[in-house]
Image 1 (cartoon, helix red, strand yellow):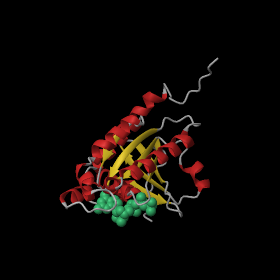
Image 2: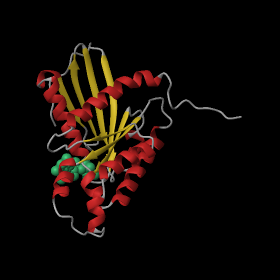
Image 3: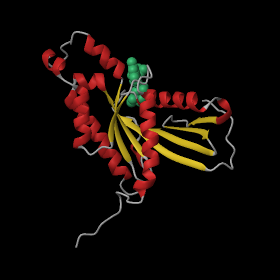
Image 4: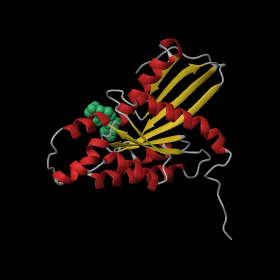
Length: 226
Ligand SMILES: Nc1nc2c(ncn2[C@@H]2O[C@H](COP(=O)(O)OP(=O)(O)OP(=O)(O)O)[C@@H](O)[C@H]2O)c(=O)[nH]1
Ligand SMILES: [Mg+2]
């Protein structure tokens, strides 16, 4: 646990919630750590950043100061093993849900990979449908360095034919999946090398700012058909 110096309590507060979901071992925890590192690198050292992680490691609160505004982002993680009674705590009021897709693993077994991602999307939509917060859903292609490494190696036959794996363009399929399931976008990074993490963070921040406008026309307003 890392405890920095607290931010002045009288600062105006901008508070957002992000949920990181996806396959078992997709890179959710690494992505949270990479985002934390990026925020620390960008917004200064210990003087203006505080970090709190809960005992179950499902929620991480990062607070930093930008101009006069204190910014807080709660980054929650929903793992395959999360107790089902935690889910109603993890998802509601999420501003963004990131569905992590381990590109190297999905390239080996696309059918199972996209099915798991779809299942996570349905879970996220189910647990956010009744609150009054706009929730953006992004698909995040994770472990992109492992994908590159894999593509430069001869394909091994692990149940799927070698020629199929060689031809299969997992990035293209991820983009198609994003469009087919009405997600807000497809992002990609390697949390370990840091490649693409700042682009992911910039898009997340932009989306969080744009949500203010979108909230005026919330997607969750109920309608009655007579
Ligand atoms: N090379 C590389 N390895 C990664 C990357 N992201 C995650 N990993 C590795 O993949 C494994 C799983 O990463 P985690 O971040 O623990 O995955 P997770 O989704 O949190 O896993 P669960 O919480 O168990 O579901 C670890 O060995 C990580 O070091 C990445 O971008 N590149
Ligand atoms: Mg994890």
